[in-house]
Length: 191
Image (cartoon, helix red, strand yellow):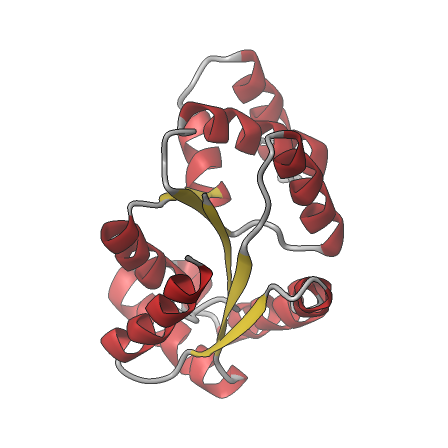
C-alpha cells in the first residue's frame, strides 16, 4: 500500500493534482476539509464532537482529527493507498499520523510537496477568487496571511519527512499535465 502526504501551500494545485492521481492510480483521497464538511451533515457521535468545535470557530484537535481519519481509513482498507490532503499540517499531526498508521501496519510512503513561490501563489489564489467567488480568495491580506501561516506551521514538515527519507520536492509551476507527470514519476518510484 502506498500512502502519500500531498503537501503544498494554498494555491499550489493540490486539489487538482490529487484528483488526477486518484484517477490514475486508484488511491483514496482523504481531504480533512472535505471530510469535516461531510461530517457536519451526519448524526454520529463522532460528528457531534467535531461539530462542537467547528461551530465555535475552533480548530478540531489533532486527537479528534486522527480518530476521524482512522474511521475513513477503516472504511477504505481495500484501496491501493491513500492521499492525505490537508493533513498533517504540523509536526505533531505528522507524528500522530505515523503512530496511527503504524497501528494498522502501514506507513507514510512519501511526502510529495508542490513547490510554488509566494508571488505565483498570490496570483493563482486571487484569480481563483475571481472565478469561484470565494471571499477568502479575493482579499489580498487574507491570502498573504494564509501563505504566511503555511510557511510558518506546515513547511517545517519538510524536515520531518526528509529526516525519514520520504520528502520529495516537485516543482509546481507550469502546465498541469507537466506537473502531473512529475508527480507520477515520484509515485512510480515508490512502487
